[in-house]
Image 1 (cartoon, one colour):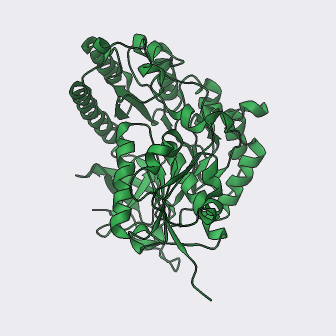
Image 2 (tube, one colour; image 1 turned 120 degrees about the vertical axis):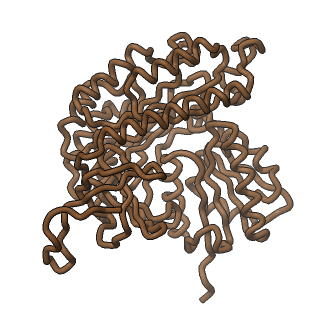
Image 3 (cartoon, rainbow, N blue to C red; image 1 turned 180 degrees about the vertical axis):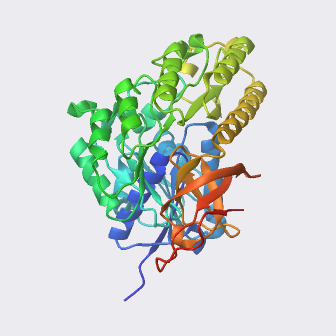
Length: 462
């Protein structure tokens, strides 16, 4: 019997893409392929792309060239958001053999089989975004090669978006908002729990919009997930501030399993710019949400997305954003430099004349300023927790004799590698911030593998 064909994946972008990559990998295994790492010279390379920024498009091209250098004879497939938005452009990249749109990618093996093998030019298969109707549940296998051996699982609970913010291509790439039902999602969580995973991260394009077409909502989902046995932690990856209502916050505050970590996109501290972006909140509502989280969960970690250099952003409005973030008591920022994206309302004729476009170098300078602010905010957050004890879930990767874990409120903790701690939750007293921005600490003495107590007291971790 001949050996099975091999396939390797590489993922660009968000947690949602990682969840979908793992689902695609399972489908290829079911079709008889063996999964290998990209450096293993597979027969098929699959690149799952993002297209949030111009850099994501550039990354796609770089990875195709890297695939070609690794194995010129490999069959290269590109899927994901960039593939849906610009299929013909990608198909023209030397080395690309097949481009699959948002619907087509979930029939990956069948399309590869029907493609006829490598050809002189790439082929693109994609349907219009208005035809994106089906919701394909996705989650990653933490032990799989597609995601690198994590101890938590990303579970896609929602896809698409109905918001059409002026800067965003996601509705054009993923279509309208849709999800499974609560019952279907709980069944998937139970399936993940059976694999031994300790943490599930709920992901989506607009997670807070879960269940609307079924007459359900995110609060109902998290209430149901809280009853799933075997999962020690659930984490909400990102949620719009207008959808992060008091009912959700109050449930998380008293939850047995949902952790005190929130990521709420802000984008700007200027109400004028928020209106131009077509965001569905203002700075007053955002402030109210942060204050409510702090009142219910003082130790919570709160992150925010911010965009610099959107059309019309004056120096005064940028400084207003900077001041707003300094005063708001958020703990870290994801800062993006605005780039013009085709077919978004921000770049359509009449949306903004040339005088309103911020020069790219100024956009990047503002990004650098906000990233410096983010470093300061995060350092303050870490130092505020030094000397406290937090539960840490440790991961499997070993780097230079050390292992990393994450607290419930999203502090990264570094300790000497111990295989007995992999995929376990250990209480750690946070001691100091190291040069990598991780926290080392002090752990209560543990039981040995035979059940014999080691030494009494505390052991310092260096």
